[in-house]
Length: 454
Image 1: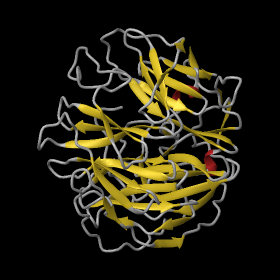
Image 2: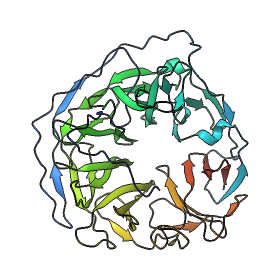
Image 3: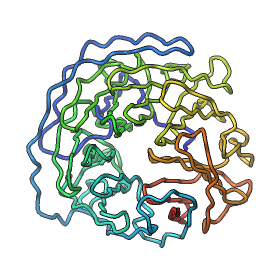
């Protein structure tokens, strides 16, 4: 977890995009549903929740099927790859067996992965094309082992894929256009720009675009936030007319609710959104010079309840914000962070987004002690979750791991083949929990892939 998250800053000067994980390349601009006059949400007293109703549903916005252009030599592609998998499709995860990922293997570049009824879809990092445009590379797999690149023309050769996930019996991707105008001489760079799209597919190969109501900033540096789960799709973005975050929801990717202005309160800053069962959880703060941390929950994706998270390590008046750490099938782990340097943080667990329990010791990882400003203030390791399971992994002075579905109850998970680091080494590293394995990246050119056994 990074020490600072990039929230949707409610700055009236910024022009932000509307969708949370949606925007695709297409010839038609997204149609925005009319919004109600924004009103400031009432402040929730400590320990209570305030309901902020959303506006009514908007019309279905369908787009014509995207034409498939001929292959272009301007498009830069990444090859397919093979990921090691265990003998069982969904083992009980009683241990993890790691092995190094060879240099240049695209497996090491996988950023996220989703499992659905027809197989798996994986997203890669920002990738520059040969003509100066950029896109997100996408791979598909029937078994999670053999991965094939998705034809770039399926979603558009300059498309930024913000999120992908299972939706009913199919799969959905939320996209924007990859804008490189602010990248300068930096390669493999883009900023999401209009229009936002939701692409649905029943086979992972052929995709149908749908417009998503929302706002996308052309040069904001902040992406829309997206969550995809059993309750549908939630997209959160910045509404400059209201000066606060706006939200929209869909059950199928084709029909979207009207854009709800300021459902989190006037001036609120939302940094992360996650699906939790059929509900959604948003995390951020109240905004302003001395914000306080907030969590919001929506049982239906449209009406949000606010909850104050009082960080026990923060002094009165000190700015505090909240961010997602890891989601599981029965709960999630969030964190409040003091927005100072160095700043302390506290983990929180919740089963349903309404009741929150602080975890000041970062259990099961414990507190890191070493050289640097974070000593005594941050977790001694890294955790991640894929919406099904949460993995906590520590490498300092010996490798240790724990597994959970809710972030509150953990059990030991034996790990083999993953090298440890020095006892006082910096504890953070890249950890990605995927449906059929675990990816660990040191950030210095060494990456490892772990296979679950059970």
